Structure formats: C-alpha cells, structure tokens
Length: 218
View (tube, rainbow, N blue to C red):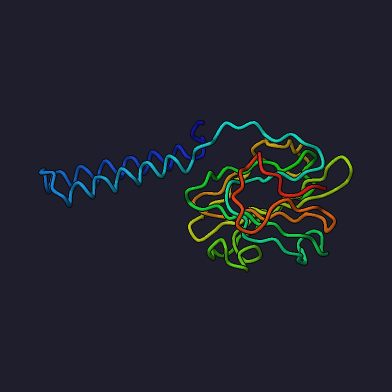
C-alpha cells in the first residue's frame, strides 16, 4: 500500500493545521486533562483518517475476459434498468457503488478496450446516494469499448463531501483492466451502465472491491 500523490498537498495542509491547533491548545492548557486529551486524540484521528483516505492498496486485478470489474471499493446501492440519456440514449442496467469516506477512493478501469467517450459535467453536491446525484451532481463520464465493440459507461459522481473529481485518461486512451484512471475526494459513488443482456453478478448491499469484484459478465 502507498499514499496517492494527489493527496500529498491535502495531507500536508491538514498536518500543518493539526500541529498549529495542538500547539495553541498546549499554550492555553499545558496540563493533560480529560478534555485536552480528548481533543488531542480527535486531532490525531483527523490526521490518520486524511492519510488513510488517500491510501492505494496493492492488489492483483481479476484479469478475466467478458467481465466488468468494479472500479471502486464500496457498497452496491443500485441495480436497475434505466434510460441512459447522455451517451447511449437507450435502456441499460445501472449498477452503482457507493464509496463511504472510509473506503479507498481510487478508481480503476473495469475492462480492457479503448476510451471512446469522455465528458466532465459541473453540478451540485447532493449526497452521493441521492437518486438524482447521477444526473445533477458534479460528475465525469467515460465509455470503454472492448475489442468486440461492446461498450460500458462508467460515471464518477461527486458526493456532498466530494468537491473534486480527478481523472488521468482521455478519449482515445487504452483502457487496461485494473489500471488506475482517477479518484474522487471525500465520499462519492461510481455508476456503471452495462448492456441489458449482461449477467449481473452482485446484489444490493454487497461489499465490493475495486480491481477484484466482478459486477457483470458480458
């Protein structure tokens, strides 16, 4: 496991703030009382959580053909047939993974192929599990087309805490299953839109891991 470079600046800022607050508290009350100990502990936990948020686990990706692997760690919150209106403009099966503030927030490509579409949308910051977050929140949409012409749409959706979607790919890039393509800071979700004839392999409430869990077979 290592810390994502995109987190260095935030981690250093939080570390500096924690040090300043701890120094001010010690200046006000140099004795370790029940209250001051609690505040020091809280500051430590904030620092620890900030570091852990940007952790990147070392995993061996599930390298299997004809599957859609989860791009994110989290919990399955949506599995339903919907009209996908941005790119396909027809019905697809939507599978959504909610990423809590305690999950790994790196995103990985779910299949091999090419990035055939990509578009960023500014938007609101509704809670990530709100039904309208997929269409009204800040989001980034990309579509991956495999060698057989099958396409899967992946949408990074910012949540109430997340104010920054980061991506490292562009249209025309090669999509390599398990390779990192982005991250979302501080609570979010990732939506997948797969063909209607795809065989969904997960159910509502399942805990999934990016690079490993098979969401659907094509």
